[in-house]
Image 1 (cartoon, rainbow, N blue to C red):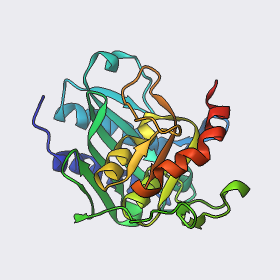
Image 2: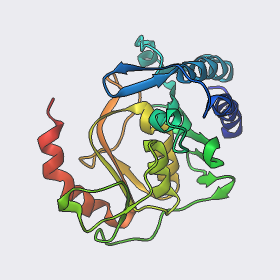
Image 3: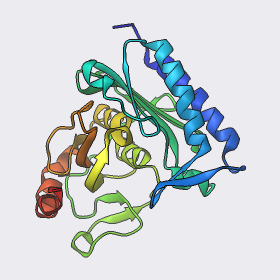
Length: 259
C-alpha cells in the first residue's frame, strides 16, 4: 500500500471543495437523478477532479462515488476511495452552508482516513485510524452524556416517541450531522433507512476517532466496500447512550429493514 498521509488526502479534498465554493451561490445546472434527488453540474465537476487526483495518490485503490457509475471493480480491491463530491446538495443549490466534500479511504472494509471539507462553514474535519480526529487542526471529542432523555439531535423535528430529545441545528449534509456528534455539539444521530456508504464513510471514522459509538440502525458494526454499497441506517452516539438508543429504535428499525 502506498504511504498515503491524511494531509495529502485533505489537500485533495480542499482543492475539490475550493472548486465547488467558486460556483456556490452562482449559476448552476440542476436536475433530478430521480424524484427527490437533485444533482448539479458542480457535483460532477468535483467528482471528476477527485477521481483523477485520488488515483494519483493510490493508483491501486478502487473508487466508489455517488456520481460515478459503480462497475464493481472495486470489490476485488482491499483499498477503496469512498467519495461524496458534495454531501448536502440541497443546501448547496439553495445557497446554504450545510454541505461538504466527503472523502474516505477504506482498507479491509474499514475507513482509515476520513476528510470532510466544508468551506462555506470554514471547517476541515480530519481523522486517521488510531490517531484521533480534528476540526481545523484542533482535537475534538464527543460529549459525556449518559442519559438518552435530553440528548441533542440534529433535526428540525422528531417523532412523538422521541419528544424527550432536543433538536439542534440540522445541516443538509448527513456527514456534517455526524461530525456534530464527534465535536460534542450533538449527542445522537440516527437514520432508519437504507443509505449509501459514501454518505457516511469519512464521517464514521471522524466520529469513532472522537470517541463516538458508530453502528448501523440495529447496532451492528458498519462495513464498507460491500457489494450493494449500502447499510440499513446509521446510529452515532456518545458511548453512554448507545445501548439505550438501539433499544428505543429496535422495533422501528426491524419493521423497516425488510426490502
